[in-house]
Length: 345
Image 1 (cartoon, rainbow, N blue to C red):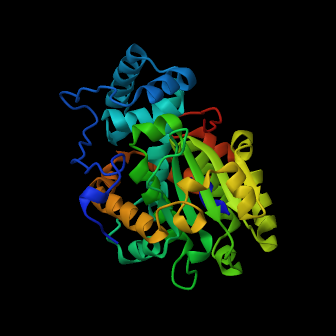
Image 2 (image 1 turned 120 degrees about the horizontal axis):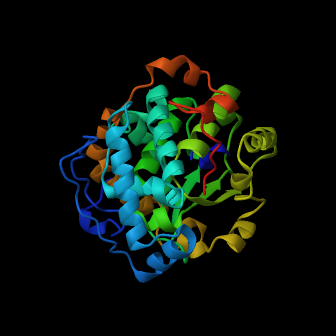
């Protein structure tokens, strides 16, 4: 059940238009001589949603990007960081253009990537093990957005081979999928829906986790992941997973708890999620194998960008041990001061 909080190649002509942008080389200079210009080129429905839900206006966005970049350039501990608009807008939109909240989240995002490199580094789809996990259909984004413009991420927990793959590899797959999606401005505004089919979930899936890992990961995600998680749908969760489910919910913010839905049957799920957006096997039109192949092509197209993220750097040596043994209070304390507890939007 936990994956929604952590937080086959086809031709380019078959990649969905909102997923198929080939990644350009990343500029990780924290204070470049100039910045690329930005223009809001999304359909009007996203502009209106950004205004209504995020308080986003052209002048507010322009000023926020300017302040954010100046803050990064002057930050004594940040050494390398993306400063392009799509990256910074992840944080600004998640935090509704609050500069203090967005900067705090960026610090935590950079920090957890270095504190837990086995979870957040080497997000390489060409890694044979990660590629094999994607090929099984364990986790992938669906090609079509729902009626509210949200990206749907689909998972079949029973596809994860716990005899072959580790918990750390599972987290890296989730990290890779998330990073591949986070620059999409439509999703930054409309958010994400996660659908998890737990029909074939085995006891082995639960056995690969320690409670410490689950707690640390849950805190990492809800305090550091710039992702507007709108709904998390679990269907056919077996009874043996109920205790783990309760434990995970206990370490999440109230806002995230209220966005979790557990369905006893596919019929209950379809009452909440329009099946036409799901794989063909669940009532949609695109076969699951094709959905997987299309998304894998997206991961391939963004591979260099995802791997280059490992070069981002923030100094955390003073607090490394402190962060590595994080608690509720620790994760909120941040790298350079005492931060208030943050919640995802």
